[in-house]
Structures are given as structure tokens and as C-alpha cells.
Image (cartoon, rainbow, N blue to C red):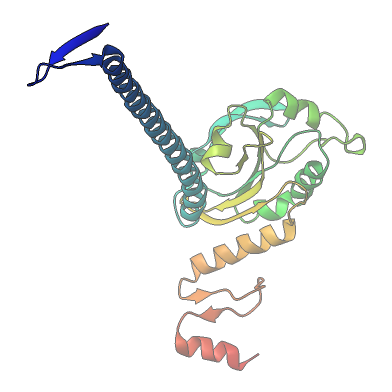
Length: 268
């Protein structure tokens, strides 16, 4: 298709319509390029935004988890013990026990262990049972706790020691099947679904005075638990004194001031 245009001299110049069509095609091509670039940039921007949001969520989640684990442990000692209540096996019977029943009456050694019918656990449980009278004389109750059911506790108690069982024990075994106590005391192992070997000494006012947590493969010392309980009771009845490392009943304590500490150190 052609178009004739006359110049001033009457000569006609023929302009090929195809050139105009080519220009139109070039313009359409440029529009498509800009459109593609905008879409690409938009997609890229959205991708960056989604990545940033997801990454921030992960970072926030990790920070919250870290803060939870640190802060809970940090505020247990010296503060009110978290409430616990549940069914326990006592003298091969099921009874409901709670922390409240001991407040104002007894100290409590609350210890958590991973599972019934395992290996290290029965050595700890029976060791505490064999020394129960020593704790009882100090107005202290011992309570063992795991995430097993009360029926598992009972079956384990009814299994003889020489067969990997417990036999009769002198204190309650608390069932924490709903995992409320293990979470409250921050001893729950998310990977295994079991409790770590946490041990807490709670005084008569319901305040946690001592806390220790072992990993699963190694057990705790009954001697050290008893010694720590005795030290706690000593400083509570002698508020102007403190117990140095390794203190045992009969050992000299230390006055909590500059003069008193010098007197103690001068005798070493």
C-alpha cells in the first residue's frame, strides 16, 4: 500500500507504508519489553518481600524459643515453685497429690527422670528410697516424676529390683502424662518427648532454693542433694551466715560481712 505526497515542484514522492508498519511494530515490541520488565521486576520484588517475611518469621521464632528457654530457667531459683498436681502411686495405690499440700509443712525434693523401665532411672529412684528416712527427719518429702502413666509407675513398682524394677519405694511417683509439670519446670526435652534429669529443692514457703538439670545419660547424687538441703535449712535458721563450698553439718559457716569472712579465712 502506497501514499503519494506532492512536493512544491509537483514531483511525487512515494512513501512505503511498510516503513510506517515497521515503526508501529517497533513501538509494540518496546511496549512488550517494558511490560515484561515491569512484570519481572514486580515478581522479583514480591519474591524478595516473601523471602524477607519468611526469614524474619524464622528468626523471630528462634529468638522467642531461645528467650523462653533461658528466661524460664533464670527465674526459677529464688521464686515460687510452679504449681503441680496429678495422680501418683503411693504404697501401690493411686492418689492425687499437689504442691499445695506440702506448703507450710514440708520441704520438697522434686526430681524428674526420663522414663519408667529404663536403666539409669531405677538406680536413682531406689537410691532416694533407701535414704528416705534421712530426708524425712529433715521434714522433707521426696517426689519422683516422669511423663509415664500411673499404670506404668505401678507396674514398675510391682517389678522386683533384680529384674530391673523398683520394688516398693518410700515416696510418691507422680504421673505427668499431659506434660504439664515438665513444661512448668522447663525440663522437657522436645526431641525425645521425655524429661531431663531435673531436681528442685522447694522450701516450706514454696520457694525454689536449688535447681539442677542433668542430661539423660548420667544420674544424680543423693549425698549431694541431702547436703544441699541441710545447707539450705542451716542458712534459713541462721540468716546472718552463709555456707562455703562443701559445707556439711558440724562445719563452720561464714558471717556474711567483711569482718566475719576474714575471721573464717584466717582459720584456713
